[in-house]
Length: 363
Ligand code: ADP
Ligand code: 3PG
Ligand code: MG
Image 1 (cartoon, rainbow, N blue to C red):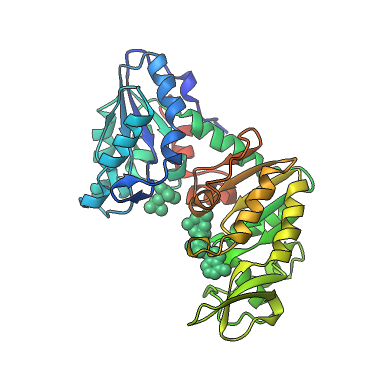
Image 2: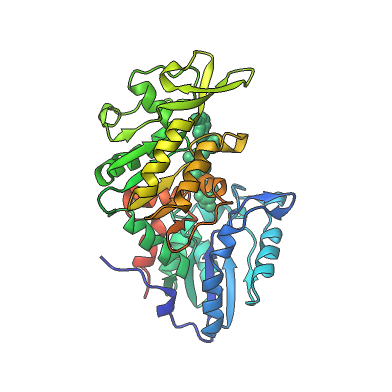
């Protein structure tokens, strides 16, 4: 299989370089609320500048404007944040998704974008599950390379597909049906898959246990998955009373009809923290509870355990990265992926449309 080429293999001196990034970041009151995705591209910008690139032109999408101009999704605050973080000169084009041709992977748009540069760099791992014009189209037209962070994402997530014996995967969040292929695959690779978040509700239901008024997905869990004993669900949980929001914790099987399961309980948090602090490798995607509504204790307990773990870990997912933001992980040991959907799709399929586009590129 043809390998993707790193930007370090590109001839950029005197060239106009198009850098596709994923600055799809949360905004609050007209400013960037979380700049992880911006900070991660700085080494590539420094590299291009030091290597003598004539111009650096940054391309990104933000949000889902669906092919028209949406004032609140203009890139001005994102550009301002990047200018605070770097002294490298750059130009930034307006939100790619204001143009309907971006998501349609239109060749005309790809040609327009390609005409702006001599070399293309994909530094948008988190958007590379989208076969859009700036991801899948432009590499057909220009010599194309992967950015430094993109290479690191691929390396770290590839390693997560060959974990050492005794490794543990933790999968939380919601939308079980979108994560089934991944869970199936992880069960074949990991010693245990710890399932939290709303995903656990689906398995609890599939195992014939009471689930009260908990959020469950409409698609039933395949019986072979539900029956796998290495798929571990919480034994105790935090319950919220529907309507009143009164909360209590208790054994999962004691959930009442008018309650929903909203976080893993303290015993489960302690048990799982122990498992992940001794596992040689941990893969974690998805918060274990409704963290943005204040039910963050399970998620935070696991994040704390990771800061003390002896092994290494890969953590990812848009919500997960936000939920563990305040924990200062040792970057040598814990890699926080910028990918949400892209991380899940890479783990499930072992590749992404943006990776295939680089492989098939002109160089
Ligand atoms: P990520 O973005 O990290 O991949 P997801 O988007 O799949 O994660 O899931 C995050 C969402 O899951 C959050 O909005 C969170 O509130 C929700 N969630 C977590 N646990 C539960 C639960 N027990 N019941 C309902 N929703 C939950
Ligand atoms: C993400 O946040 O996962 C990427 O920026 C892709 O966003 P999308 O789901 O709107 O394509
Ligand atoms: Mg999410």
